[in-house]
Length: 204
Image (cartoon, rainbow, N blue to C red; front, side, top):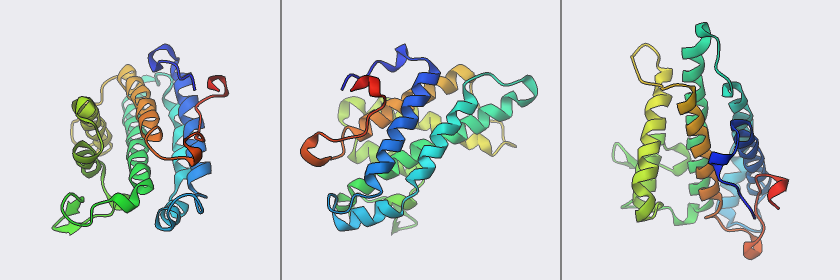
């Protein structure tokens, strides 16, 4: 599969690819019985990967700069949109590998109790991925970006002053999300090691 550098794509092309890839993930993993382990397949069949697709399409709302009276609010909602997608993709990835999730040391915990991946919050997922998923050479880059997404997403609590950047920062975040999708999708198993969702028919 030939996947172009995200930096060479327009933001419209990036969003289109995100939508197509999340739709392919939804189509395969919500009906994975017979391929995935029973517990994994049941968990994914209950997941709302359809909402990941819908939220992907909502990214088109942030393609252009909004009028001044809506600009700050739109940017905050854009980061909330992106943060929800990032969190959902990380949960999907851990759900695929549900049988490998630690039952003791190493699991996500909250107030001394183990938190299942589907109930984890973004920052909990960030820390888990840092310790268990990312390879050493990519840890710092992904962790830094996830911290930025977390902080800007939290600007939805609008009364407190938080930095949200400009529309170009949001677009760079959306581009990086496509890279996250590519990375996560490339590390999950598919039948024969061949089948898998694609971003665009032009890449086949």
